[in-house]
Length: 189
Image 1 (cartoon, one colour):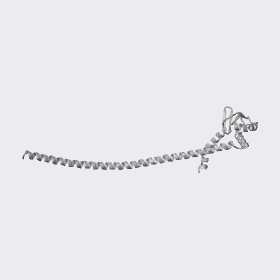
Image 2 (cartoon, rainbow, N blue to C red; image 1 turned 180 degrees about the vertical axis):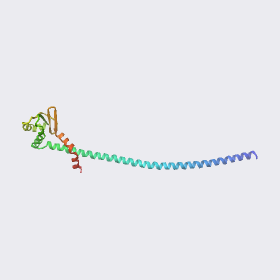
Image 3 (cartoon, one colour; image 1 turned 135 degrees about the horizontal axis):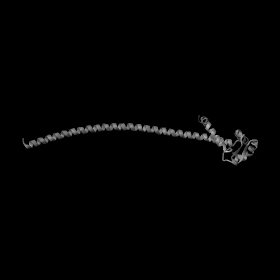
Image 4 (cartoon, rainbow, N blue to C red; image 1 turned 120 degrees about the horizontal axis):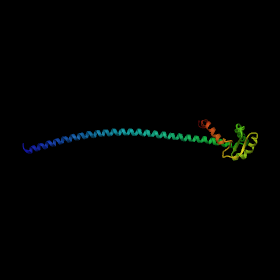
């Protein structure tokens, strides 16, 4: 055999071997690409499912927050209506006819007439009822003070270092604590 034929044969074997390696490499590459494509598709589906679940959870949270805010707003509106009801009640008490209002004040003072003290009224009530109360209490150790206080109506009874707040505002606040649930049931049922 000649060198040329040996060289040709070696070249041919190298080409055949290279071609075989190329085919094997292409086959492995195709298998890797197919596997990667399957993994990518599975990951895509998994991400789509997760995104859908996340969107659902987010939507539910937003709905819950919106419902909570709506409940807060309704509760606030109801509370405002109750507050207005008590404000109107205080105005009605302050605007009672003179004889009824004076009787109301005397009724509030009844439990305290046995001990000395000073009755402080607002300026309007002092002008309207001061003399009448002084006359009504002349047998009692209570007296109407020359001093006035800034209240809507009712009085402050000062007995020594103790002051009893019987202002309409305080009376309404006390009643409000006691009957708010009943009022809410009447107004909103």
